[in-house]
Image (cartoon, rainbow, N blue to C red):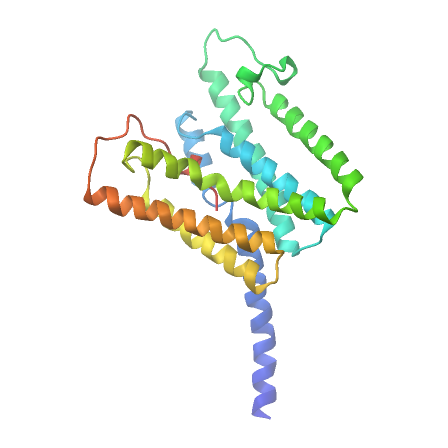
Length: 253
């Protein structure tokens, strides 16, 4: 009788924990961008945030959604990609509006110019949307033609998660090049590490495709390497970096 009562309690508790974990997966990746968004709105200055992070995350999550059509995975991971895409579009919209408002006598640049020198540095948010739609259309068409190829589907999934996993590498390289972590928030790196560790554990426990687990482990390794740099450079200080780069511009959870 006691065992039945305990079971009645554990079942909804287990369900609640599953819902919380799924919610954390869906929305956890966008949390670091909330203070960044508010800071840009408050200061009307987007110099500390690189819109190339938006580019990488948009590509990675569009590819992940296309991968889902070839090999279904956990629904929270699919919704995570949708939420991240919407978040990056909001960040792009704000950054573009702020940058254009601060630019004086600068020639208007658009996606239709097809100028590689000004790629992803256009004057209107609509140009970014056009680029994203064009990429989605081309990638979607190729996926449609190759959806029956197991090799293509697995490669697509690997490219999606590998692209996201590499987001920490620019910060790692910057620290190495300047022999300094000045301008990098240690609290932010700890947030990356905890978030990536949670995400990787979620992949492993829920039987996500192998690509997710491998690249999740790679992200954790990059995070730990950055923490190692912070420790090493703090004990062997070098010449300060020429300029500070906002940490949120180089990495996503």
